[in-house]
Image (cartoon, rainbow, N blue to C red; front, side, top):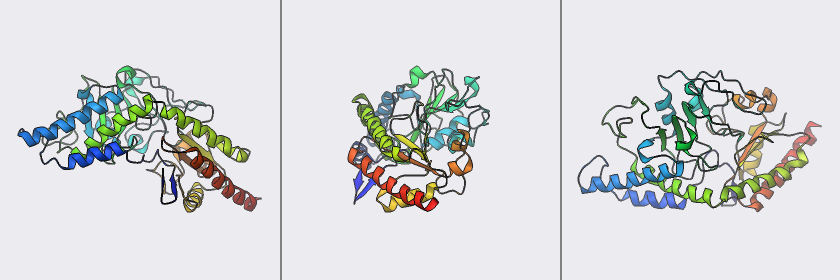
Amino acid sequence: MTKAGRTYLDWNATAPLRPEARAAMIDAMDLVGNPSSVHAEGRAATSVMERARQQVAVAFGAQAADIIFTSGATEAAALALAGRSLSGGEIEHDAVHSWITADLPMGPDGQIKIPDPARSCVQAANSETGILQTVPPGLAVCDFTQAFGKVPVSFDWSGVEMALISSHKIGGPKGVGALVVRRGTEVPAQIRGGGQEMGRRSGTENLIGIAGFGAAAAAAQRDLDAGRWDEVAQLRNILELELDDAANKTILLGKGAPRLPNTTCLATPGWKGETQVMQMDLAGFAVSAGSACSSGKVRTSRVLRAIGLDDTAAASALRVSIGPDTTEDQVRRFAQAWLKSFARHDARAA
């Protein structure tokens, strides 16, 4: 994606809004009815919402009745985890990490060891490194936020009890997501009121956002089925080959491990990630120094420390995350711009 001379390479933070989602949202804006109303206008709104629920369910390999719409994966995490005592790893996203006991060990391959899945919460993919986890059947909660739409997933086949997903990571609007709940699982409501979402999440549903989420999920599934993300993986590999000129000074995180097809995370000890982000921004490229929810905070990434980096190396990380709209020319131009900045940094450090 390029706009006004800029190139967007931060898809793990948020994916560009898909045209299908935009169109569905515009159509939903014309609906006056409340989905909880029984008159014709309310039924029309309900129809749009339930179509979106079905679209999300099909794309995620779940049943429509499993989908509880929320304001995003963060709320879904709170709904799933509040009042429960679950273990997880240090690499979990803040939205999950704040609810769990981060005491599960991790091997040198980046895989979390999960002795008791029924008492554990583990992510399917890490937003910073792209490393994929092996998700065991019977896992209490799994954060599929980064994996959904990029790699094949099926809630039904996974055997997971509950899953978290987000709209804006797959090209839908921000501010909507879902908790996916296996049938028979008890989920006490955290937001009480009118009993919407099968009594699990009260409050009038965000119909416009939900419509966009559903359309984005259907489009994301088409992209996945068409092999678009295999093409993305090829572009990621081209990028990493282009960056080989700095290989003796730069660590490629997750190299050799199963990873998301779109994620490259580099650490160049002594060259702060925030500095790299600003230099690339001035060069016309949007990238990040890590998770969008922790970027800009004065701290090193606990995810990168957990996989073995010291504070200096962790503070030097740069994440490039691409998508189906990214072109080979954009990838190569970014590599050239980054290598040019790296050469200046290396010369100063010599």
